[in-house]
Image 1: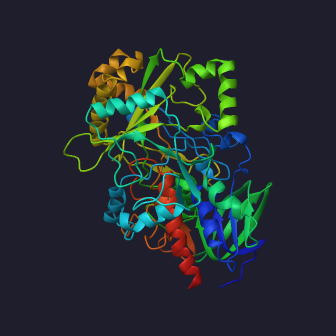
Image 2: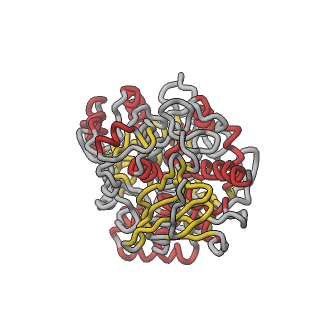
Image 3: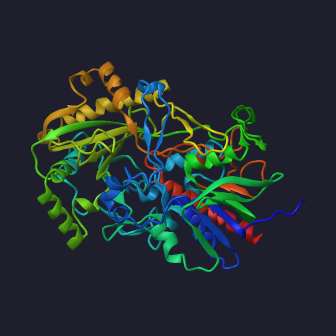
Length: 540
């Protein structure tokens, strides 16, 4: 084996300092004998709006903090392209998301195991959920304190959020006081990864308190361009920093934590993926792996928007400079108020039909209203909304290279609503949404339903409304799925890329099935569990 030259060399090199990468780097460098380089394409998380919970509305449209991806024209959505924000900053998408912290249903992870992810059942992953968190409401069989991620309750839920939960209760939907506890079924208020009114990303909770470790080197504004292979072993990364190409060597492990888009793109651009597709793109195949970029999943949401006469919606506040000053002062003085709240205040998990074993629909109540595109902004009228999505969609998409080097925005085919069962569940959600709308005290807050209009009162009209208006909930996963079948990309034992040595993927792309709710907590769990496996391997 010929010796390779590198500009720098470490035991471990991690590509991506997002939600997973910050954890992997922190946990592995707990051993002072392990040297590690963490590489991030984005900047440090110094933009002040990152750390204000409601600031997600400011940072998502910022092209310096967001990769700004888009899907290809979606056949199930009348050919529309759907915008996919992904964090391009220290902390990744966990630095720009809506801060709602929901693990998913316990049965989600048992299903992972049934799909081939041995050792990832709920009993196996629960200790890692608990290890990661500091739940300000206390510890019990399902919850814990002392971890890096601080989780807090919303101090003063808005009137629409409270009315939403009360209306659900009147419809005999059980009240749930902890969606991260024993079960997710029911209606209630969400937790946020917020401490003293400020966002706790994994960059804040894990990485930054440990950046002084001499064995940890963080490189920001550095783009990973290629995995360097020596035969069937990954030995480093080629990166671009300040217009210069460098080679960073990895004596033991190369770990990809770029997320569900960037990790498969890097694999494909390095010649790891479906050989025929790579050849067609002009990439020399290095390792034929059919599943790279496949099995893409995401949540698609439909929103119901209302005009209201009540005071205090964010729509009104953003129309009034005086109200904005008052909101800002409340936040500065108390770390409370609207600025301390994320994307959602209340949520509800219900079964589309009584025969379903676990809830398959999620609803979210929100104290503002919008078209769904951050650049459009909020409606000018006083308004609020709730949205809903299918928890575990059946539709599957894929990610493909747009150029051989992986420098161009990749082709993202989400294939939303291309499976008939997704339509069945979405329509059942629409029926439940109309029940909520017609139930007090929620009903009493409504002056007029703005979206959908009268055409959306029929099933076919609602379907057309979804095709023309539905948007992502920002939960892409599955593109480097773990398992043991021929299409699996990573193995369940340690998330190694199958058939290669020294290369792992640790991020949401390894998930066999999207969790029922958000993916941020599950991504944190994946990184914690994988870190234990990698630490054991390094010791061995």
